[in-house]
Image 1 (spheres, helix red, strand yellow):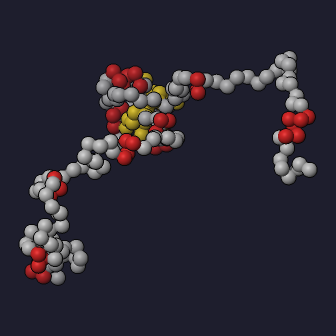
Image 2 (spheres, rainbow, N blue to C red; image 1 turned 90 degrees about the vertical axis):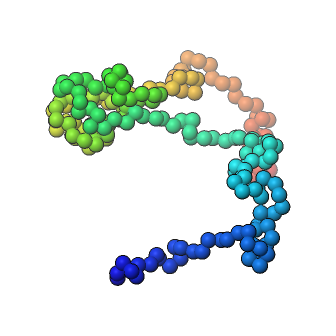
Image 3 (cartoon, one colour; image 1 turned 180 degrees about the vertical axis):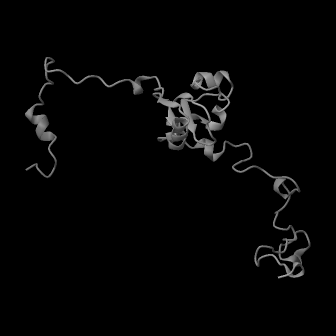
Length: 189
């Protein structure tokens, strides 16, 4: 193999489709662009899903169903490289990192990853810590304290009610007629 006989891989290069060179070109008089209009003009194009100002199909259809995106939790990611600038014996937590502008934005907690090295002992309070980060922190003489993740507010996340005690009256029994009506078809005679 020499520089003068290098070739691209077969099939990776192909001839450019030459448009607008007449009816004998195989692409017809209008080069596959139809007659006039926005799509026939050079540089003129419409975005995907645009229907000329009419309410597009994606907006006309109802949006239903469950979506896990509503329950996604975003953690602030911090590596050991970011923490090596703090003095030994410092307690590192989310509040300290926010005040020093290392993390910002709306997050549910702090996650420490093990990229980089730590030379001095630090006390780290985080919601999640990777195994490699924990090993490096503890080998440098530091400690890791895991915090509990903040729970969202609202009725869906409220604690479950305690079980009903024996002192409360039991629910009334169903009548025999209603019970017979609830039997499966296979048991009815």
